[in-house]
Amino acid sequence: METYAQILIYASPVFFILVMGEKLYGKFVKGDDFKSMDMISSLSSGFTNTLKDVLGIGVSLLTYVWLVEKVALIHIPFTWVNVVIAFIALDFAGYWGHRLNHQINFFWNQHLIHHSSEEFNLACALRQSVSDLIKFFTIFLLPAALLGVDPKIIAIVAPIQLFAQFWYHTVYIGKMGWLEKIIVTPSHHRVHHAINPEYIDKNHGQIFIIWDKLFGTFQEELDDVPAVYGITRPVRTWNPIKINYQHLWLLIKDAWRTKNWMDKLRVFYMPTGWRPADVEAKYPVYKIEDPYHFEKYYPKLSTGMQTWSWIQFFSTFAFLMLFFNAVPDLNLTELFTYGFFLFFSVYSYTELMDKNPKAFWQELLKNGFGLFLFIQNGQAWYSLENGGMALNLIFPVYFIAATLVTGYFVFREIRIAGVVSTKI
Image 1 (tube, helix red, strand yellow):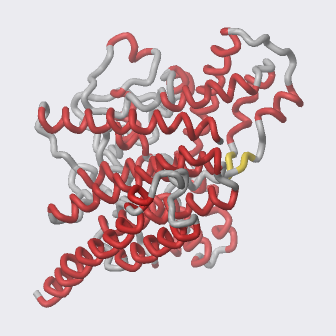
Image 2: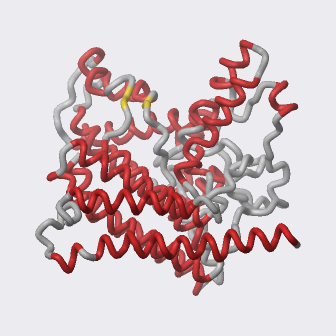
């Protein structure tokens, strides 16, 4: 936990710089729109995912250590060969886990967040799940376990393999010649994120595209079929915490509402998108039928609200960096208390981005909780106890100001605008 938190102190700013660099390149070189709210939503999802990982929230039904102990036929020495085998084994496991996430209703909930953006860019690579609290797919590491690959090697290679999936989330790199036959490229992954009928559920590979070609899920990007991104049941929110549980909530409601007792169970393990016939008829859910003609989700926000959303984002980013720095010195209760404050922060400002009138009360509660933590910690913020009075004064000032500014936008731009539009 502590090592991972320290890595994130350096990795998080690097990811942000790369994401911002791509967006600025798109705007000033390619003339593309700079879609701020989508970017903030994606980066905020990265906040919640890294928080979940640092806090160690989640369990694996089958651990790799146990698997090695029980089934290893040989034990490969700690060499570069071991590393290569681990990398290939993780990619093989990743392919099958990824594929099942796309094909089974229940598992789709823990992957939907990654596909929820209607844009395709480096930022959407950071849309990672916080709902995968139970990990099911360690079984696909069986080949590595049979060869006795050291669990320490898996632990080292896994984050490298994950970070290596970042770069190909972009529209600004075309086809890459002979590399297209071996590794996953931006062209391959554009297909994977598309909702065009020709592209859905294709190219599940993470590093090597070979698995898709071996197991029949490969699709080349077609020049005459431009990729349209998102999911066919659009999430219609910027709030990454809501997105993480939206599909599961639909499954639970469908299981409750259907009169067929078998369907109450089947709805969870049937192919992604399946719903009981009686529920589908009575409670229809909007689905994009024509990927070339639909309105993307983008509530119109004033320049002031967009600016305030960025301020809230960067404020939360600062709190997150302080959290990573403080991890070695915090006990379990403090870790989860601080973590809850950060989750609450993301929830609150993304609700304002959605123009939800309740955003003020959420912001009020968040900032009240922040003030409570500040006072409880001796009128200082975590890891800044020795920072001096002037430095620590920033925190209560922020909590009060954030409440007032959010209140202004809610009551002046959301509630009043809502009343006017109703009268019209």
